[in-house]
Image (cartoon, chains in turn red, blue):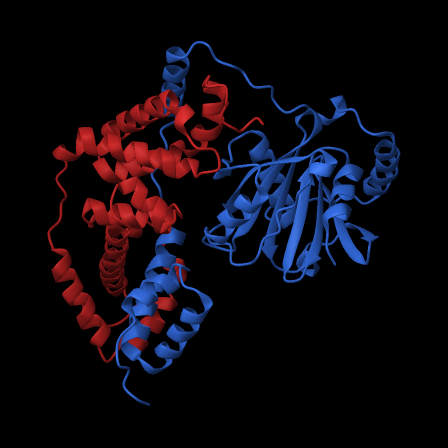
Length: 197
Length: 267
């Protein structure tokens, strides 16, 4: 089978390329979201591919190749680059969540939410990426892997090397923060009424 | 309406991410009817998830990076085993009955060639086929196990039951598959490889064949109506199975694709 992993122990670069190269864009995007520096992102992706090719014989046929590559990429990032990262986090997750709870309790919620639903075509620019950029790295990674890359909880937890419950909690809280950020943006743009949180 | 005894935060997240069984789903739905706090929590999370999946703009891959990485991979491993590319259909040895039937169908098809409109489903599926063939569309799961393929779809956003065909009798083997348009209207896409590496791509989605564009040749078999399109040298056969539309696409002989569809379609 042309897409499979050779079972004679001899790793084929061509087969590896067929399986792995189509995910290069997604991996670069993930690396850039982690490092915020294009040069570092490119280096991480290159190292990921070199490591993955060397260990291609370990790839289990029938499993998600994208998740396998993300796992290697995240390992490269954690081991070599994470210590240099400085998240530009200004507001703590806890503060964001307080804002979120205030918004949910707002008597004008229903009216505002209907307004938000009418903004479906308004989110074509970089505002989603910018909102994600305000999240701490581990929260951002959870959203990117599950909501953007469509990995399962189990796959995403495997990539990040964390327990399933941790992944679930990060995703839960990250979505709350993103909601507050996007709602603020919608207010600033005049898509919905009210004052900024 | 009575005040709920507890809130359903964990269940709401699992419901949103399709991780709940049917009984708990029904319980959560009942709870939401009487709990504004949980309803708002769900609305906010669902809206946020949807916006992120639909409108997140990924950074573009620098073109020179892919070249750089491929050069490094090939330099590190000079003993490359080059895989044969899929053979073109004219080199394929066709069975006599297929050849005769293909001539008949080709003649009919040429009288009513479907000029695929950009964005129409036959056009989209033909483009998907080309992308699979060129390996620019990656398979998210590589497997020849039809049950594993069906499980993959069930856990990756495909809400309907997929029926991944076993085409072994026709000498086609499952290669793997992926979910197309996962945040819009998910389609289950899976690929088969047959004699001489000929590929057939199957797609399934929730819809109606009646919504497909006009211009198809209609064939009937076993009480099922099949719509046959030719798009840029490829044959796409669509048919309805319950709420699901199934499609087979290949650049092989038209009649061969049609016969594969006839063999596997269920009334």
